[in-house]
Image 1 (cartoon, each protein chain N blue to C red):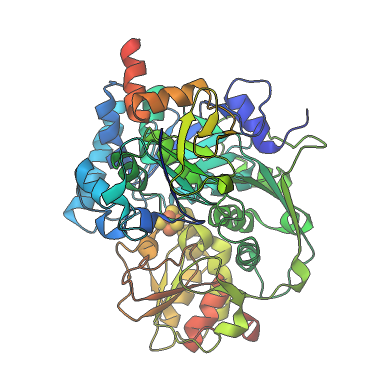
Image 2 (cartoon, protein in one colour):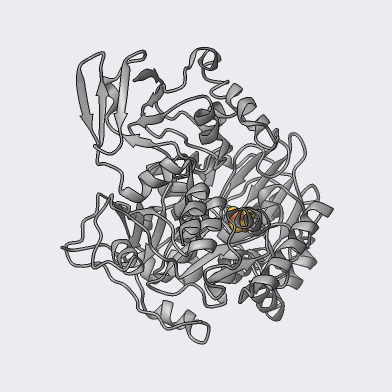
Length: 418
Length: 161
Ligand code: SF4
């Protein structure tokens, strides 16, 4: 039988020749990732009653959610994690000088083509840009894997999203992703593994591809996967921690759903509060004043994102009413942006350049919103209360839209300033 | 045999287990008291151990809170039967020892007396004298459910070795 990329990866990791949709299997992941929630997971792990984790070389722990810790409780969590890492001999621990888990997984060579990655974070599918099958799981599930090396999985249906056409000026992977989510809705790919392909995807940088696989989570998908090509190879050169074998779908593989898009007629998009699928053309948002602009996160905190925003802000000033916060997604991005002079551009424009990490994305620290405030964010979620007050509003857009908005003090179309 | 409690599409985790209780440490009995509080306040007064939850599509959409599965289990619900589940909810339910069964639920009405045979993969509707088949759960998932959840199951497995 013919199989999709996800079927082939799951079969290999489960020690089976092939698997069919709906089959329940118990694969051994190539990596199991967790972040600050490893503190809670380590407690559940101890309840299970095993002394040692199944394989300290396949466990990755990255501190990113609240770095540096903002309360004694968070500090205690980090301390508990560091103790656990030491006591268990966990090989891949990335502390405060790494960045957001999904970005670090790619940069530090964990995102291997053809690998199966499970992580206790809902945006784990980001790794799919590197041809990995990567899915988010619960905390108890990570504890169970630490103890046994296995977890049950249902083999998902596959959904092929094909994008062709050249993206117009001022339109980015974020706009395309929001457009798709607005179209298929937040449960449009529920349980499914989305395979993205087409000319537009081929033309994209790895950073842009990661925007799409990151946002696959907001389509309800279990995983978002892309084909391996020379760009994947180029990015991974000198980074990968192990050998890998890229996976292609078989000819005639079965896709339960298929959708085609033409990128050629896209415009910048905005997801209005309070759901990611509440998507409109930017025109509808243009008179909305904002109090904060948040550039960063695992969706849009990479070098190309900072670069485009800086190119718009160069020689200009952030609107006096607006707080603009810039969070490079990782230390690598931070360093590169510094070398390119991008950080200086932000600082001169009046933006605050912060340390790599999730920042206010999860509403815990470093720039949360007050009652009635509005934020234009480059993140992936705009749920009520996500970034502070329940009475605040979050609008999602691209980094270029964020920069244009920061200058004008209201949501602005980047095509006017590019 | 148990009563079917039938609800519609897109029942979200906020109405199953309101966010205002999510970060409170509550006992199983207290958690059960809040089950479906914002959808059907009468539910908890009338539900009996061994009853079933029946719903439309995308049951459990929204947050990943594990309590939204736990509270129904503690309220006595034996299984959830829906047209489809939100992905994380589905996993949470099974990992909490609560079977999540996917069938076309249009034929089941609120108040029907039903029964589920997990091993055979069948929902029996005694009121309508009908049977609806679903692909049986594989053995390991049944074992998780029988153990009362994933962590209990893992403990048991490790104890054996
Ligand atoms: S940046 Fe936001 S969405 Fe991404 S991992 Fe951090 S908290 Fe989650």
